[in-house]
Length: 275
Image (cartoon, rainbow, N blue to C red; front, side):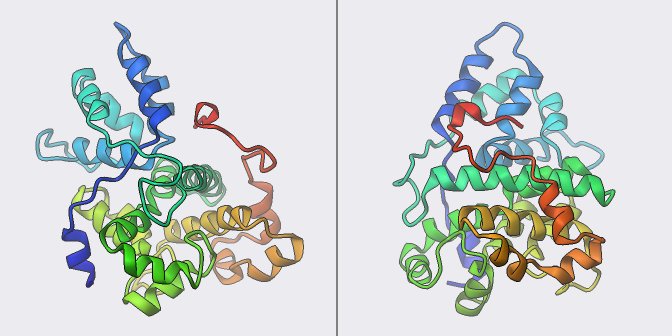
């Protein structure tokens, strides 16, 4: 299936059930806390994407495109946010997207977002855009699995969905990778071009007419989060570190590892996710 045909397929991106439940509980208050809503939306890639899509729609005619969850929440009314949340498709730990363990996907996406925000702060990039891009960056993997599960499964037999080599293998087999799919979603949602560009080039930051530092930030953040999922040791981390990307940003492996904002030994449940 070609990329445009894939993007044309209607798919329902699932949300973390507990996050939806916590959002509904907060939205039931007479005056919901925007800080709490921001925290909860910031743990769920699908919900965050739908929120940003709505905020950037022609309905609001904002003078500039919105990249951050806090700004999107400030723009929308509580009634609109409530409608968005109540209509969210719910996922489960293993069945809502064939071939992808959703609990792992949500954990991995959140870890990447946190790392991206931290790394962006060091290299003086927009931390809000970095967090959003990191949170959304792997949604294309869900689209691939939902729209063409047989082909996705054929790739899964070669490399797991969160393998460090996943993007390269998909590029070789499909002619595109999950990052290209996510970028297509982001363009449809009218997200800022810097976010779209970073998503498109996240797997190969130098394959671009003009190098986008945010793509490099996401590349390093996702490397670290994927390495965590693979439980790589020190030697494997050193061998797999994308040194050229780090060099372009002025970051070595020690600087990246020191920015880990996550307790890697913990196995958080949905209720423990905090932005």
